[in-house]
Length: 312
Ligand code: SF4
Image (cartoon, rainbow, N blue to C red; front, top):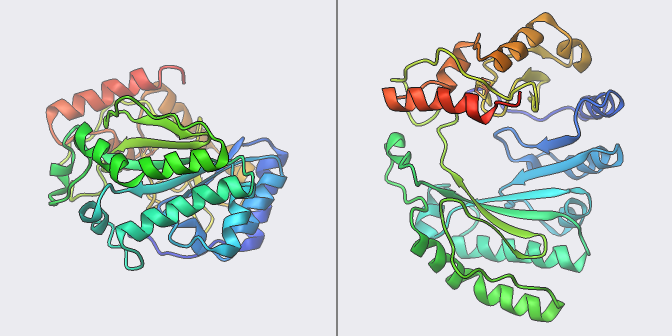
């Protein structure tokens, strides 16, 4: 990430939530955009404020900053808690360069949060995400990293770390343990206990922007759901079209200078939005995002965008 890092001013956050809620700009507020939300000292208050304003709340976190003080607030006010575990063993965990925890400690922390969910009677849906590499994208990163790439590795992970825990917890709390007959790493999405889901997500290059991807072929035409079903606001108030633009390459305006509604009604915003619907990409960053590193990926990414976003 190249942009300057920082923390959103709390008054700006509250003003934004008021505007989103009053104008029904969004139903969901997601706390993430290539940063750890709980680094902000006001994060639990922010989540509560959004929830109290009638918005659905989604927190994506690496949980390393969960503690006795914030866990209760998070589990009370977050509708969807996504734990970005990513790793399935110590080697893959080391890729994340965690200074604070070993992999076993990290798994224990995840288990504690699951137990707390039931202690507090929380309705939060907890999704634990692992990263898989079925399309062998990891080669593009030029890194010697083990991503999840087989059903047997996934089964071993659950047998070693989770089966006994789920069995005991289900007996203690009278919960149904939905133990699967088989696990498939490519498209895992399974609810093991009520409100506890594991899923896999394909490793991503964030629109060809990480992994040293300078040799890409820019897209000519592609559709995108940005500005139709998502937009992002960076800590400094810059409005960006999507979470792929985590570096703020496509700034549509700044909410410290204009209201969010003014930005949404601007010509530039609507030109980009209309372009995403018609398959026209005006930004070089979008052309990179929807491009490919070879002819095959260049064609499939663009064609797939028209299929995936055909309803826009
Ligand atoms: S095409 Fe542009 S707006 Fe859409 S995801 Fe990629 S960078 Fe974001």
